[in-house]
Image 1 (tube, rainbow, N blue to C red):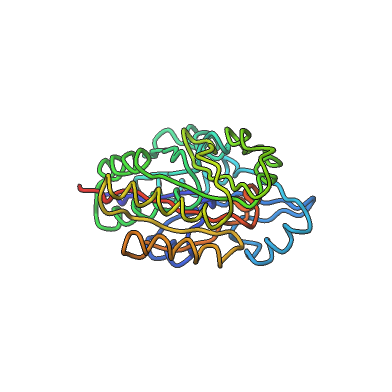
Image 2 (image 1 turned 60 degrees about the vertical axis):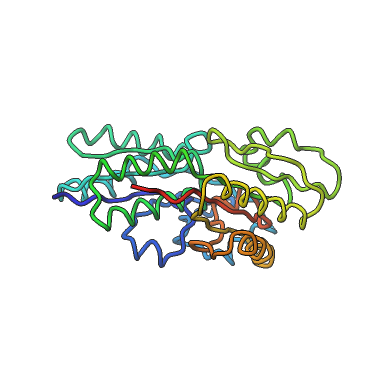
Amino acid sequence: MADVRIVTDSTVDLPPELVARYGITVVPLKVLFEQDVYRDGVDLSLDDFYRRLVEQPSSTSQPSPAEFLDVYQPFSEQGDSIVSIHISAALSGTHQSAQLAKTMMLTADIELIDSKVTSVGLGLIVVAAARAAQEGWNKHEVIHFVNWLVDNVRVYFMVDTLDYLQRGGRIGRASAFLGTLLNIKPLLTLSDGLVTPHEKVRGRNKCLDRIAEITKEFSEQRGQLVYSTLHGNAPQLRQELEERLVGRLGYEPEYRTRAGAVIGTHTGPGVVGVAFHPVYNK
């Protein structure tokens, strides 16, 4: 029986040990500081990236179709099925590059899925899919599961400033929050693949409280959750958020991670957030 291979992109922001444990293949996007080009998660440490980001703006670019071909071809030649799950197509051209690569491989068994999220939300989807594949689920079962996850995963996050989202052109519907009063923290979500305002909250602590409350409310409606937490370069904020989440939910996150260089380019170092979905019953 053919293996099911899970492919994603570097906006998945997964800890390297999870990528290795579940055999996930990650295609890197690129981060640019003027003429310097780095592969996200490969060529530049996160500490170095965030130090440099404070001094100099960065930009990002998607992988080329050729880079996806380099990943897809060996799996296809082995007769494996590929489930390729990527950052929201509304936020990046990465999905389009993967689609172009697929059209060049007419006999390959490739299923492309737009996650409609990114970062920690994408990570939850990819880890769950890779674990299922490792447990022997067939391609159709994995695809059905991933589509269920896309419909059921939720992401809520706070940024210290909207400047990075605005600068990178990823502000989406959150532009409605521009020009808000001092100390108003925008609580953001991802909806229909776009960064979307959820509500305005006065102060960081109240915003962290509100994220935890929203998560708890979802749990009360849907049962136990699988969740993960994220920060850019603000570990104390992540810890404070997680204490609130564990206090309300009573259990630890699936994993903890940091926003990688591509996501950090668009959110800035002060991002902190959570992604979650209900437990899936096969």
